[in-house]
Image 1 (spheres, helix red, strand yellow):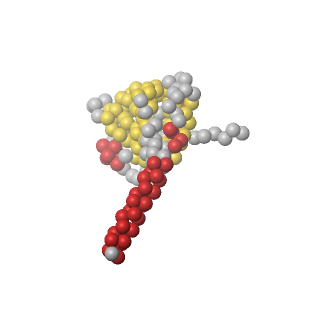
Image 2 (cartoon, rainbow, N blue to C red):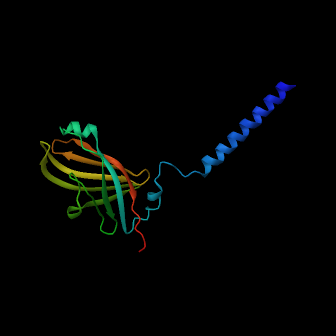
Image 3 (cartoon, helix red, strand yellow):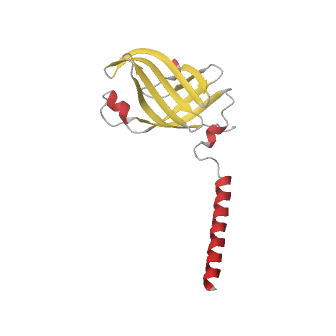
Amino acid sequence: MQMKTFLGGAAAGALLVGAIWAILVGLTPEPSVPSSLRDTRSNKGVLDLICELQLDLDGQLALGITGAEPNRMSMAQIDFGKSSGWYQGRIAISENRAGNLSVQGNRLVVSRPAMFQRFGVMISREEFVVDRSTGAFTQTLSTQDGRNIVLIKGSCAQVHKPPF
C-alpha cells in the first residue's frame, strides 16, 4: 500500500515538473536570436550596431599574422537607403570607403572589391556578413590566388539611441 502511494506521488511530481518546464520553455524567447536584431527586418533606414570582434585563429594562421590581438568592440552601420555598410577597425571596410550592401534573407552582406597587398598576399575582395537571426559577424578576405579567408568573427547587437 505504501509503495503504491509512493509511486503515485512520484508520478504526480514528475508530471508537475514536466508541466512547469514546458510552460517556462514556451514563454522564454528564442535564445539564439538577439532581441535587438529581431525587429530589423524592415530593410529601411539605418541600422547601427555594436560588435565584439576577435581574430579567427585559422585566418590568422593562413595569413601568417603573429602576435595576439585582443578582442575589441567596434561600431558598424548598415544603411539600407544607400545600400551600403561599414565597420570600424584596422582591417575593415571603413566608413569613408563603405562597401555595397546585399540583403540575402537574414544575412546582411557588405562587400567591396579591393586590390592591395597585406600580410604578403594580394587582397582582391573584402566582405563582412551580419546574420540577423543570430547576431553573428564574419569578415572574409578573398585573395588573388583564389582563397577566401575568414579573418574576423564576433557578434553584434543593435544600438538604440536615446530619444533626447
